[in-house]
View 1 (tube, helix red, strand yellow):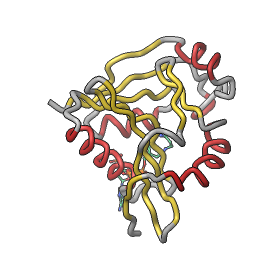
View 2 (cartoon, rainbow, N blue to C red):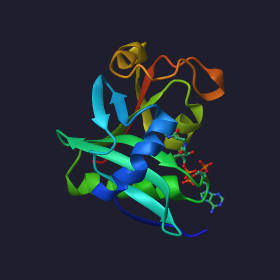
View 3 (spheres, rainbow, N blue to C red):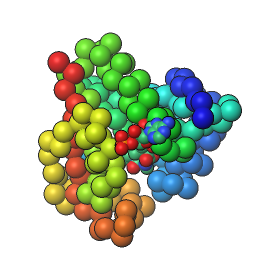
Length: 160
Ligand SMILES: CC(C)(COP(=O)(O)OP(=O)(O)OC[C@H]1O[C@@H](n2cnc3c(N)ncnc32)[C@H](O)[C@@H]1OP(=O)(O)O)[C@@H](O)C(=O)NCCC(=O)NCCS
């Protein structure tokens, strides 16, 4: 099951917009009360047989690199880990102090996944999703395993 990774381009909009609308409600991603547009932020795309097999989006600001979105469409063959490595590399090139991300309290598989890749839980922003819903009302009430989506969980990986 081979895959390769390339940088995201403007042409990726064509599939990212329908993908985001179908899977994440819209192309808006809200973290820490900030709206990111999935079509605007930079990222990397994993491909298999020239078809998208995964995506990671990031935002570098104030010497910190946020993973804004990570999704693998062909799981358990190394795509998620390889996409994180790409972002770690670019964050290092920009002399970022840390790579960080927000996931939600329901997403226990993601919390597990990131910790196994060296990330630490550094904050629970309690009830933050109530504020996020004001910016993105499409955020569902319940997530993984029917767990109510309430809190933002912040994880980080220190680079230096
Ligand atoms: C979390 C997520 C990104 C992981 O992506 P992935 O492509 O499955 O990740 P990987 O393949 O790198 O790793 C997954 C597991 O497969 C294993 N794996 C990797 N290559 C493998 C192979 N060739 N054979 C068998 N197992 C393999 C990894 O070791 C890992 O297991 P571990 O966590 O127990 O170590 C993916 O499940 C996903 O898209 N989830 C939904 C969206 C989401 O929640 N995103 C994050 C929230 S911000």
